[in-house]
Image 1: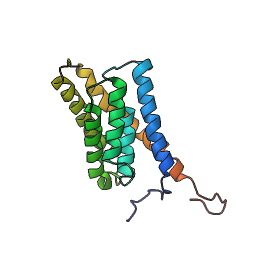
Image 2: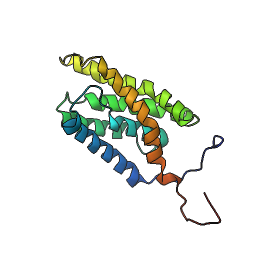
Image 3: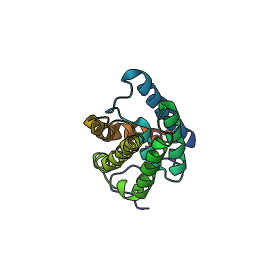
Image 4: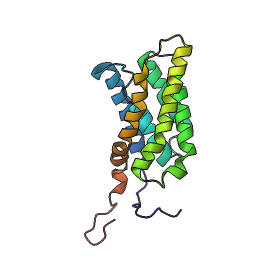
Length: 176
């Protein structure tokens, strides 16, 4: 594959790092729901951001099955309608895998603008499932969550690509 101009050649992603980042995002999501601001409608879904990142950068390792399992874990944690996060994360992962070849050609801010509709659709799907289950409308602040997630995209990209940007063998004469 031809690399886009100015893009750095990356090392292969370590599977332990991928799974560790997904589990860390799940733990941070759970802590955020329990303590910081509770289940605020505007709170960003960190699992969704990290899941989309890895579905775009490593679609052969993180796919719809992974998204489904993470969604079930979130459903059990939130005592929510079983399957609502699983369906939303699965759809999110499917859409991210569908655009993974195209999105990598853009700069990181442009990528954030392109993943924003994915986050909006996932949140709308969760709200629709909650409304069908008999819950009340959470308010229009639910539209802030996808915007915050899109704003987190550059930070997540920087943090999760950092191990892949390091040289495998450090040498003063051969920078990577």
